[in-house]
Length: 449
Image (tube, rainbow, N blue to C red; front, side):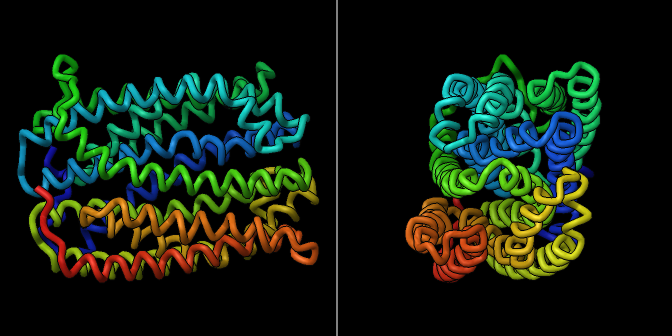
C-alpha cells in the first residue's frame, strides 16, 4: 500500500516529481488513444460527416464538464493539503464529501447535456449534415457522464497522496474495452456515432466501478464507506473555493474554444474534420506536458500543508524546464510527421491539409501552453485559485475572443491562419501574468491548514 504513495514533503524532488507525473502522462495518453480510437473508427468506417460530428463535440463537452472537473481539482488540493499536514480525520471527510459530490455533478451534467445538446450545437453553427449525428452522440455520451465524474473525483483523491499508478491501470483496462466495443458497435453493428458514444460510456462505467472498489478497500484515511457518504460543510466550502474558480476557468477556456470552433465550422465539414483530427493529435503533446503541470499542483499542495516553502520553489522551476523540453520535442515531432499522422484519421487529402495547418501553428509553439498551465497550477497549489482564473480569463480566453472579434473580421485576415495564431499569442501573455503572480504570492504564502 505505502509503496504506491509518494510523500512529496521530503526527499529528492526530481525523482518524486517524475514518479508522480509519468503515470499521469501515461494515463492521459491512454485517454487520448481512446478518444482517437473513436475518431479513427468513425473516420474510416462511417465517413467524413461522422468524423466531423464526433470531433466537433469536443469543445462543447469540455465546456459543460470543466466546471465539475474543477471541483475534482479542488478535491485534489484539499486532500493533498490535509495529507501533507497529517490531518487524518479531515482526509476522511474529504473522501466522503468528494465522492458524493461526484454523483451530484454527474446527474446534473446528464440533465443539461441530454436535453441541451441540440440547442447548443445549433448556436455553434454546426452544419446540418453534422448536427443530427453530433446530437445523437452527445445524448448517449452525457447519459452516462456520472461514471466519468466518479472516476475523476476518485482518481483525484488517489493522486493527492501520490498514487498515480492504479488510476493508470484502470484507464488501460477501460481503454481496451473501449477500443473493442468501438469496433463491435460501429463496424459489426453499424451503429455509427451512437456506437462510439456507447463504447465510451461502458468503458467509463468500468473505470468508475474499479476506482470505487479501490477506495472501499483502502485501509488508511482514504477508505470510502458508503454508509458514511455525506457533505462535510467545511470541507465542501474549501473544495468549492478552490474548485469553482478552477472549473470556471476551464469552462470559460472551453467557451473561447467553442467560439473558435463555431468560427471554424463556417469553413465547412472538410475543415471541421481536419481540425478535429489535428486536435486529437496535438492532445498527445498537451497531456505529456499537463502530467507535469498536475504534478506541480499536488507537489505544491502537499508542501504547503507541511510548510516547506523552499521545496515549492525548486519544484516549480524544475517543472517549467521539463514542460519546455517535452513540449518542444514532441511538438516539433508532430509538425515534422503531421501528414503521416493525419492520414491515420482520413485518407482525404483536403482533410489532411486542413489538419496540417492547425498543427503547424499549435504544436510548434505548444511548450508555451505547458508553461502557462504549470505556472497557473503552481499559483493554485499554494492556495490561490481565484487569481489564476482571472488571469486565464483575461489573458487566454479574453484575448482569443478579442482576436476573433476584431482582427479576424478584417477581410485581409479572415482566414484559418489568423484563428490559429491566436493560440500561441494567448499562451505567452497568460504565462507572463501567471509567473508574475506566483513570484509575488510566493513571498507571503502560509500553510493552509
